[in-house]
Image (cartoon, rainbow, N blue to C red; front, side, top):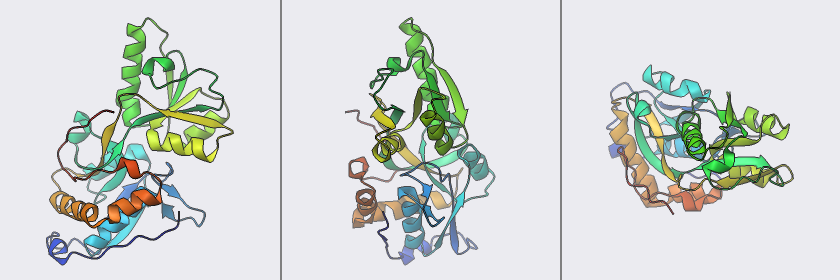
Amino acid sequence: PTQQITTSENKELSAKLPEGFGSTLDSAIDLTSPPSRLVDENGQPAGYEVDFAALLAQKLGLESNVINVPFAQIIPGLAADRYDLSVNNFTRTAEREAQVDMVEYIQGSVGVAYAAGNPHEIDDTRTSLCGLRLGVLSGSYQEQVDVPEVNKQCEEADLELPTATSYGTNNEAILALSSGRFDAWHGNGTVAAYAADRHPEKFESTAMKGTLSHSNIALPKDSPLTPILVEALQELMDEGTYQQVLDKWGISDWALDQASAVATEVIQP
């Protein structure tokens, strides 16, 4: 999609920015997970998370500066104050919350992509992954939390454990899946669905049962920007530009109506 969605500055909010903040909002984003974040055919950052970064910058009277950073390096970079924030689909974990602030901005889920025809009969249960070769993104929630949960459920069911291989980017992992180097890619639900939608002759996908979550924007720990960002994001939600981004990328059902710097209840379907 190429539709440009814009908003206006809220001068009361921009006046709250720390003295000497500068003129840009520097967002670290791993541009290898379409439709969330990607490099378009003109070599420019694109995706719904890039659009959100741009709208937040506009709301605060700033220019959006997207920096392409490998996923596993983003939280260490935020902890070292190299970036202002990262709109990069982070799921909360205790380990992450000890290092960064998090602001909920969209729903998410764990998804699986696999070969067309589903030769391994994968379904929406974790035990359908037992004994398979899995590809995961290095540093991701799936690598750190969900694959261990798959292992636990396979062990409890007395089934063979899967073997997981970590990749630096989701693009590398999807390419490896297409060449048969593993049986299923285990990652973000929208990324899995996008791969299957773009290449139905190669891939199918499913969202894993009981894995609906709230994805978060990450900021340096105790950042003075965090409460300002919550207000800016809530204004985008209330004025409708937030929903326009979701509609643009075909993920309208993933909307939240509340921006929050603390975890809110996730209601599983």
